[in-house]
Length: 234
Ligand code: URA
Image 1 (cartoon, rainbow, N blue to C red):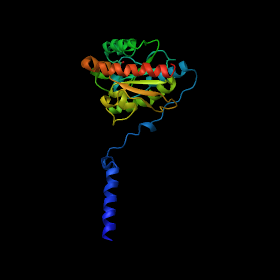
Image 2: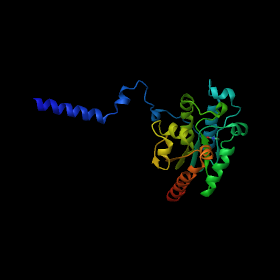
Image 3: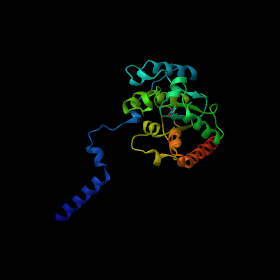
Image 4: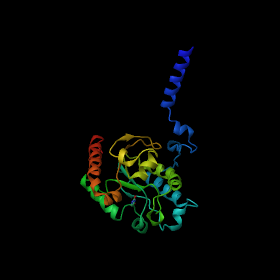
């Protein structure tokens, strides 16, 4: 009887060690990113992209829209099999209406050219399509608000490779529990709507401008993209 009780206690301790009690006891709801529905559009690729753009234009009560001047939707080749996602537009992007046209964009262009890519060969967008004031990071609510549109965007482009630049894009699409320094340089395949791209995260060019010693790691990630493109015959 006593032995039985001891065994039960051991089993119980093992069981509690197996489950994440922090998650069980936490009052904050789990972010179930994968349950967020995408918007479905019909027509050709260009028609679908235009419908998505119009839908984003119609978003109401969004704080970002109060200060931003333009929607920043995308740049690059809509038929590319490589899609790149940044965080959100800055002042230059807001003025011109295209992603990555400022200093971070120049560095992104250099990074791409190091693996023989340019904007005619990739497609680029951001987690949010309007400039956050003072270039702050988009808030969790803003990210959540734009996520269904971003997922639809990925679904329409249907890339084979998805490069997430920085923690905002990584956390929006993969989840909050991952950090960029640990998650970068690793391939994962994940369904996003009807699309099932190979996903890799790397450092954001703006971060690399502040921490140039990290460029050697970004170079490793770029070479991984180059090798994967060859393997996938992109
Ligand atoms: N940083 C981003 O994340 N996106 C841009 O478009 C420009 C800078």
